[in-house]
Amino acid sequence: MSDVNTAKLNDMMSGALDSVLDKHRSEIFQIAGKSGDATRTVLANESVMRTVAEYCYAALPWPIRMAVKQPVFVDFVMARRERIVDKLTRSAATS
Image (cartoon, rainbow, N blue to C red; front, side, top):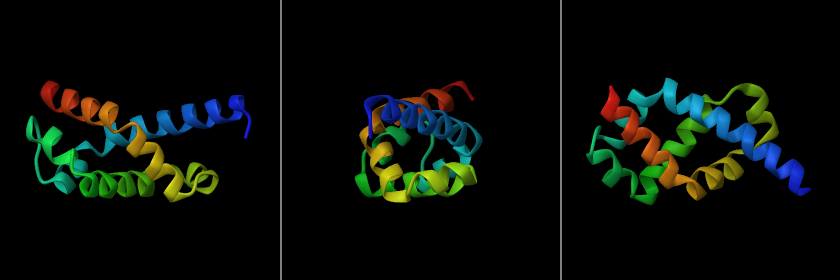
């Protein structure tokens, strides 16, 4: 895949992931078993983060799930986990 196509795919997945994180934050906290400051510690656990990534994949719009297979998406999330944890904990702090 060309660098341009890879960048477009990353942008598409990032936007979709941000939307899922915003819409399903409370469910993600239930998966993690914590909310607020404890979220960062819990999500540092790779197993929990993979479960969150799988949950987020299932919540993606159908066309994105057709274009991107679950293992690719989970790897995408794991590679960006710090940004995701920051977004979740920032969102929890402002709620």
